[in-house]
Amino acid sequence: MDWKSAARQLAASAAIRPESRWHEPVATTPRHTFVPHWWARETRDGEGPVWARREGAADPEAWVRSAYTDTTLVTRIGNHHADHAEADATLPRSRERRSTSSSTLPSLILTMYREAWIQDSSRLLVTCGSGYGTALACARVGEEQVTSVDVDAYLVEAARARLAEAGLQPRVEVCDLTGDLPDGEYDRIISTVALPSVPASWLQALAPGGRLVTTIANTGLIIVADRTPEGGAVGKVAPQAAGFMSVRHGEDYDDPFPEDPPLWQTAQHAQGDVTTSRYPLMYVPDTWDVRSTLELMVPGIDHRQHHDPDGSRTLYMLHADGSWARATAPDHRTSPTVHQGGPRRLWDELDRVRTWLTTDGDLPVRGADVTITPEGATTLSRRGWSATIA
Image (tube, rainbow, N blue to C red):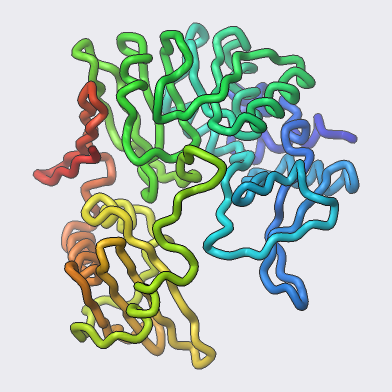
């Protein structure tokens, strides 16, 4: 298996300059070692959309192609790890079968590491997953300066063994990232899972002047902040957008919106208040700035869409407080008819954000200042706008 030339090509395709300090780690780290099995999206006759298990050793050429492409390889769906599934296993793709672990695409890992401004002497706490990102960190600063954590005991065990196979022995611990961290003082804390807010434990574990880098759940926002002498942190929203799986605390996510909740039936059929939107249909999860702003204003909206055979499209917004919205248009040019109900008008909130974007040309989340209290309350602010994530 010629993985070394494939790794060098990956280093080049991930837009790493040869003089970059990250070029050699990517070019010399055996990513395939960390992903011997994974789940791939397929559509099969008689089954429809499924997750199909892949086994690297069964097709070494495909293994190398997949492992050394700048893409995410999903290793766990719900509580089904590909390592434990049978060779020809499939899982139906549905809203209730969400990805719960993966080997993140290398360029995105490097985006997070670059934002951290890692120095040769930096003591790092990183998230584990498959262990590949941990291996890159070890190659950059040395295994003795790296601590890697995951809530899943099996992932920690597997990553520890695969890191050892690659000749690396960093500290790898089972840990809920939102709780107490492994004992130690860290110069950088870097999360490649999304968090609902910055945990106070991070600020306690950061060395003076240390830096944290994370994404905020259900947004595309990368938060970069340096610890202050008072125990909080200040920084910025990074210019790049990123999306990661949300942090979990057990085997799977606690999803407030299952596949077919009662509110879904209401959103599909109720009349509600009827208006015509001034803007064409927009599926919010396909954006990052609108999605991020709306999530800060009204956290927890569940977005869904449906395509009809006649070419029309309907978008749905649901919220756990009982609010819902339905917007339908025959094509992408026609203003949609909107039905809304519940305590809040969710589509009106979306149109408010879109008016903001149209008027100003961008949204204030882009490049916003970040202030974090020692307790973890995070405030984003720019041009007179602010939002706090408690």
